[in-house]
Length: 104
Image (cartoon, rainbow, N blue to C red; front, side, top):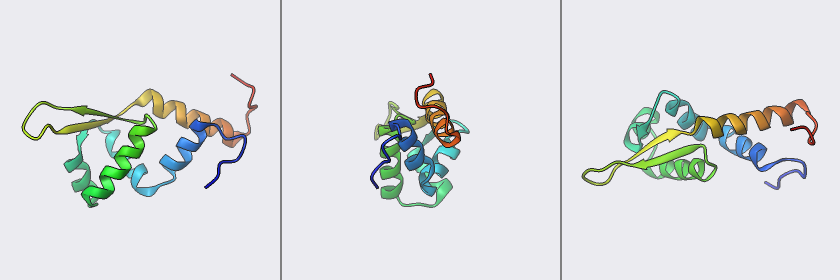
């Protein structure tokens, strides 16, 4: 999908992140605190591949942080970056309301 000229990267991050059912469900689960991929997969009953792709996208947008935990297999724990989530949501809401693009 080609972005509309006046949509910022944050607005697009909101649309693509919160407009995808699985990404939104992952974000919702992570609001309760950090989780391992296996926990997310179990909670949502999705494949390892699906969860991995969506977590990677959310990491690229800066919404999710991955922290490698010492141990066998070097597991990764995922958590939300609440400041980035708020930034993306606020940009989306401002765009939705039609706030001036020049406003701070």
